[in-house]
Length: 115
Length: 112
Image 1 (cartoon, helix red, strand yellow):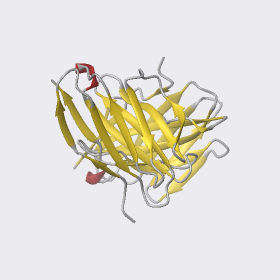
Image 2 (cartoon, rainbow over the protein chains, first blue to last red):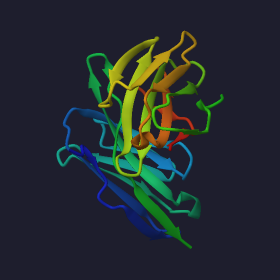
Image 3 (cartoon, chains in turn purple, yellow):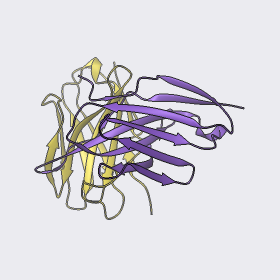
Image 4 (cartoon, chains in turn red, purple):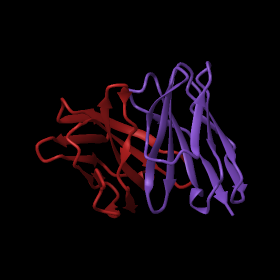
């Protein structure tokens, strides 16, 4: 059972336009959400996070929106740049009695920025 | 500040052997988590160590084990390797486990 879903395996966007990556989750115990960017043969690089008590967090060109009632979050990249081409992973965390559980990841969306 | 480091970067083993992977967290980070990435299953949580104790565990068989030392460095061991253990093994560190996790470059394990 996939608790974090990224339904678009790939997304192509023109340079300078907005990239919107989507993520849905099913576990209502998730309280912290993160986006990571990954290049082949490298570890994921942290981009931005959001706590469940917020509905928006912004950091430069990156903004994450959280809709708890819909169990949906999205990452907006504006403007999109060629260096943004990578695989983007949505991840979620639930807090358990002994601290945080491990992150649960989606399968990733391959973002391709077209010149 | 130096990032998370993992050694070795690449490893080739044969079925039945065992392997030990090493992870050095970011200085000051006390929580270390391990993940397995495969094309079919994606990124999956193996376990988390904090203050030399395993605090959380994912859904993996007992062949996968780990430990953490007093300096927060961690090792992961896989015994009786199977072909399906071929994967990228990633280590991530955070201050105490509740904050953002920062990943190392990974160890690529190939089991023949």
